[in-house]
Amino acid sequence: MTVEELLASQVRRYEFISQHESGHAAAGALLGLVPVEIEVVSEPLRTAGQVRFKDRPATSDAVVRKFALMVLGGWMATDEEPPGWPPDDEAAESDERALAALVQHLRLDKTGYAALTSEGWRLAASDEFGLVEHAIKSALRYRCFLDAEEIANLLLIALGTERTAELYGVDLDNRTRSEEAMADAA
Ligand SMILES: [Zn+2]
Image (cartoon, rainbow, N blue to C red):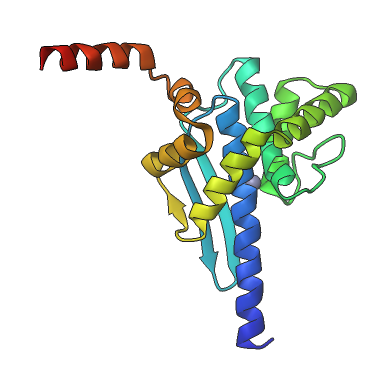
């Protein structure tokens, strides 16, 4: 392999992983999980990525389901079929292992898993998913690490003020009122 070929495959791999990680972040954010770190590690022979969220899959099934959909978002962003039933908790791919654990926690059967993946595809087909995915993927072209503040700014651009405030639990009405109070006082 020539250096040019190596570089070209490295770039393709970086783009692919960026898209995949953007899918996790977009699915998570649209479901109310706040992404706090997005990283694509790019080394000559290894490209990998990860998204960290503020929340953890807690005891609530509703949150566990959100995490399962967030994991599915990675495959959906790159138009790949997610693992078939049942996802393997000893799979080589860490996403499949994570998905398997979440699906087991939710005690889903084959039908329940099909419903989960359908929900994932519907989410990934939404305009909002595309907007968030695009914003994050574009930012990852220029830097391989995005912190919580950068992610918040990208979500603000992609989703607008109200939707982003809702995600971060910011009460816009209260803020507006106190700003009005300050303006009146001034
Ligand atoms: Zn992944």
